[in-house]
Image 1 (spheres, rainbow, N blue to C red):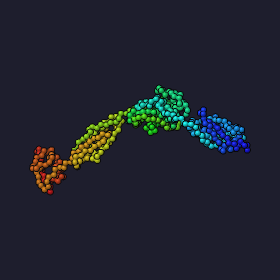
Image 2 (image 1 turned 30 degrees about the vertical axis):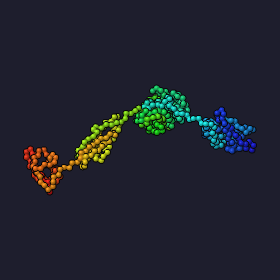
Image 3 (image 1 turned 180 degrees about the horizontal axis):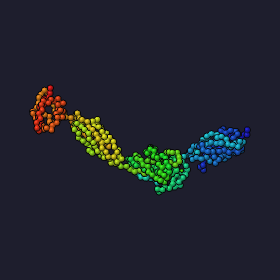
Image 4 (image 1 turned 45 degrees about the vertical axis):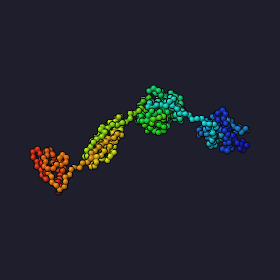
Length: 422
Ligand SMILES: [Ca+2]
Ligand SMILES: [Ca+2]
Ligand SMILES: [Ca+2]
């Protein structure tokens, strides 16, 4: 074997900065003797990238030094490099020696700052043009699948923008996994109507919106609009919280081809849902019964429910509704003291006041009366009654323990004699 085979080769490399420190590796133990041949050409693969001749190293046996090469990387970052040598005898390259770490000395540069493209956060409610994604670059303000702007419009980074038929620019060449972020400020907590302006030639794909990392829309599907510049609007109600946020448009599926074009988003306030009831309360006698309450909604899309807060009032119709409606309820008979109960309808309170139970007057037991219980109480002595008193009423009284002693009907009046008790 040649002496050089056992020499320790130092591959001296330096970073790209002018005053770079030199990095040296004793990679000889990783090599086989047969790889250390005459011309000492080496190829490097950085961070598992392709082996490239652009960082070839040539070493000299006599001086046991290698040409200085520039390794990629920014200050303070760590990488791995694989090295292969040219086997002159075999006219072929060796196998990689394995991953060798290196660190570029220095202090890492500050990460790129994400900032609103127009200098100030985009206002919600308002319009968010798709092409106004934040500054900060790839992985910070956006992620795009290929370098450069395929459409050449508006901006010059990797997001693919083209001139829109609706003026301005739209994002196109959209693939699953791509995303765009927008620094926004929401004026007021509440529900907003989101409109997304989209187009697709053929069935489009699925995207969704995140606010500070939380999904606020669920999947939204771009339909076939018949052309890449035939625009349509997708609408969804979203709940937003007042203050500054980062809005992300995430393009989810399918993996290809382009899942559609996006021109802009708008967020519009939605009038809050309020409800009023007519009436707001109802007096009910002890017998109870059914009735209803009218519900008026501030917006025809506002949903409400009607819930009873007591066991003796049942919601029997209109337990829920959207917009204006009617809720029906049934009040049970009261066998106790006066009572009040409520229904909660659309957040409003409807009150039912029910009168106390009044037991029917009972005659003393073991007595005989000539008299009547009409219309209230009872009257001692013979009485003439209007002939519109029904037999049904009389029968009810008899069921309470009274006994019909005699009845005489004459023109215009009826006279009863009723015996009470046994
Ligand atoms: Ca691109
Ligand atoms: Ca793209
Ligand atoms: Ca636009």
